[in-house]
Image (cartoon, rainbow, N blue to C red; front, side, top):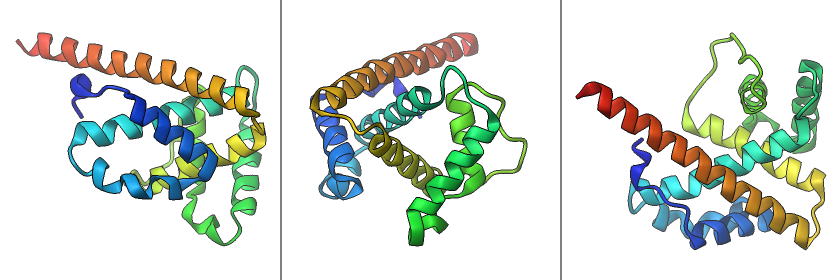
Amino acid sequence: MDYSQVEIREENILALRSFLLEGPEAWVPLQDEMQKDDETAAGYMSLLFGAFEVAVRRRFSPTYTVGDIVRFVADLRIKAEEDAHLINTLVAEDMIRRAVDAAPLKADLPDDPSTVLHAQVFILLYLIAEFDFDRAGLEQFIDETTAYTKMWLDARRSESADSSAQQN
């Protein structure tokens, strides 16, 4: 994906707020908009990824054990009840490990977008419920997420520019 055209806009932030308050159903009306072009979809998905990263780091950093991550994913699957089958255990554990800069799992993991997205959404919403934010806390989380996501996008742009420069 070329991130050079991806910008975090106000509508992305409003959609994230709705998602965190109402769950995935809040994004149903956005499906047509996200299918317009890759940059539009990438704006929403980048902010979702940023929220996941910030939430995981808040929960597990700076100290955690691999056992903490394993227990968290097990608890997440128990709480998911009949939807537990949507959460691939190894994918969820690997995503958390990567978010806290731990060594990734060495297992051969599925990388299809649906499996990754399900794990990401379940983990994020579980953490948001666990944090039990008041209004100010939620706004602070969204501000932190927006700042993190912009830095992440800037890093992708820089990588892309460096790669282009090396090819020339």
